Image 1 (cartoon, rainbow, N blue to C red):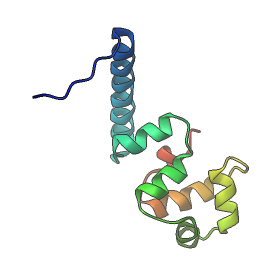
Image 2: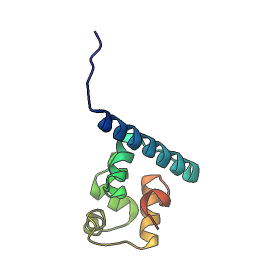
Image 3: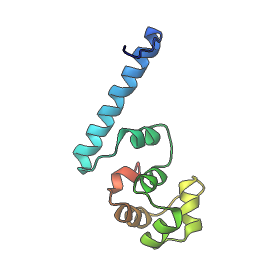
Image 4: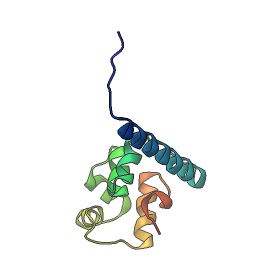
Length: 109
């Protein structure tokens, strides 16, 4: 027997649209950077979560470990992840290198 779920058509259509949007975002990021991120983590970024935190958790790093790898103070990194401070371009480059990702994934501008 197949396990099924019934949802209203409008909800199904909204889910399909969201999936298509996510696929478009992932394809664009991959085309730009050559670096992919699993949908579970990409969804978190699309939902507004801080991309540095998402990438850090994807890479299995604690806050202090990423701070050490990137040469930043843990408190400063925490403030960036929580949206209390904005880092310089050099800060984001150091984080991108430490997370083995591109700057495009971490910063919008």
